[in-house]
Structure formats: structure tokens, C-alpha cells
Image 1 (cartoon, rainbow, N blue to C red):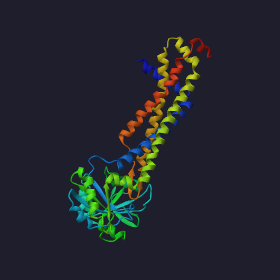
Image 2: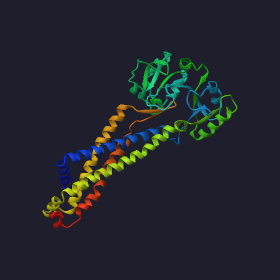
Image 3: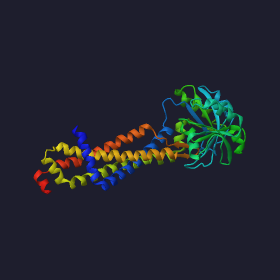
Image 4: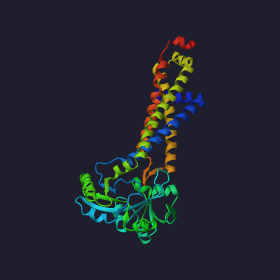
Length: 382
């Protein structure tokens, strides 16, 4: 019970010096805002590029080509690939982007055959009416939720990008970051609209019958076309994304140091504030000791101050970052591939725990200092 009572007393101590406390809480909030944002970037990078043990999708691209504009493969490669051992399905995809460089507002068109749409989205629930609308109109598109939110698009709207105008047939909510930021159209429509010509695609998405065969199948595909006019380079989907957008991956990976710096800065900020507060009430603490307060009571009050600042400032920073990222719908795209920054519950929980730990840790040294010294000297404030 005394812990709760002393915690309320610590809160009153913070209120007595409200300006100093408010500035410290604001600084803590800024640091935790930065940490939360960086962690969300890291999670987005992990979702887009980290290979899973059961990954069963390969991407077949033109060898020594990266940007979708430079990868041109004959569509009839589909027939040859589908006959290879270990191949479950093949989807030819035409990719057109409005910006092949790194951008925060890239629109990626993915054209695929009518009969392949169901197999591509087999793990993503799509309304039957949306599929029907997409099939009935050649210029219709199914777009990801992030693209829809960023461009403020609704079903029935028309929009233009990369010289291609489409009508929105529906919006999908997919776990795949690439699907969240893409517009899916019919293959023949995209081939004509982009003036790339019929019979030519950007890549093939290949599903294997067993994830253990993924490397063997990739080698077979590349061996099959090694001496053709358009040789291929086949990799697992996540590895393809990581390699193609490696500059973007390196840039986001570097931000981890910014997150660490923010945590350290918050720790020092809170500790400095509490040290100043403890030194400013030496006589006051001595009076409290003389009327019956024990050393552990004063130590807990000091720790509680750090805890309260950490919780209040950290909570404010986490909430601000959550609203900022949730409403911003941020995604960085490069060469038609996207890293989408969706907030995970685990990220919020991690940031909350770190804020509490920082608050408590920052009060340890000031708490030790508050117990040192002779009571008489403290009363004299020597």
C-alpha cells in the first residue's frame, strides 16, 4: 500500500515543478516517437524481405535486369516452365510503374491473365462481385488498401498513373506488402496500354509443389533458358525483393542506430531531470527522514518519478507515432517493389516496455544518491 501512496506523492512532486516536468515529458515523447517510427520501419523491412522456411514462391526475372522497364520475357516461357518437375503453377505478370526510382508515392500496375486471378489471390478473401466487375471491364483494376488510402480512391473511381487510366473495381486487404501497394489489371489491357506489345511480360511468379524444392526448381528454370535470347535469373520472392531494392534496404537498416540513439537520449534526459530534482530537495528529504520516512521510501519516490515520466512521455510518443503512421499510409517503393510500414501490436508492446524500463532505470542513480550523506548535514544542506 505504501508504494501506491508514495507514487502519488511523487506525482505531486512532478506537479510542483510542472514546467520542468512538462519539458522532460515532451523530450521523452519525441524520443519514443522516433524509436516507434524506426521500429515500424524495421518491421516493414522484415515483412518484405525476410525469407520464411516454408516459402514456396519464385520470381523469374530477366537476367542482369532490375527495373521492370528493362525486364522483358516472352510470355510463352510459361508453357516451358509449367512442364518442369516441381512446378505447381506459373503466373505471367506485366509490371508497369510510374517511377522506377525510390519514391513514397509509386503506383505499381500488375497485369495478369483473367484465369490466373483466383490462384494469385487464393489466400486473400475477395468479394465475388469484385472479381466479376474486374473480369467484365478491360480497364478495371483491383487495388491494395494502402494505395487506396494514400490516393483516397474508392470503388468506381477512375485514376491515372504512368499514362494508364483505370477504373477501380474493388479494394483488397492483403498481408503481402506488395499487394497492398499495387493495382491489378488484366494482362492484355496493360500490354496494350503500356505499348509494350502482346506476348511480352516482366516476370513469372512460380509456385513449387514443395518448399524444399525451391532452390532446385530455380536452378532448373535458369538452366532451361540459359542459352535463349532472354536468359533468366530466378530467386525466392523475398530474396528477389531484398536484392532488387538493396539500396532502400540498406537505408532503412541504418535507421536502427537512430532508434538506439533515441532510447539512450531519453534515458539521459530523464536521469538528468531527476538528479536535478533530488539535489533541489535535499533538505526536504532530510526533514521527511527525520519524521519517520525510511531510505527505501525516499528511494522508491525517486524511482517512481522516473517511472511516471517514462510512462507519460513514452505513452504520448507511442500514441503520436501510432496516429502518424496509421493515418500517413507510408510506403517506400523502388523498382516497383514496396516496403509498407504497417504498425504491429508487438511493436507497440515493445516500445511500451522499453519506455517503462527507461523510466525505472533512469531513477536508479538518483535514488542511490538520495540515500547517501549524513542526516544532520542534509538538514543544514551542506
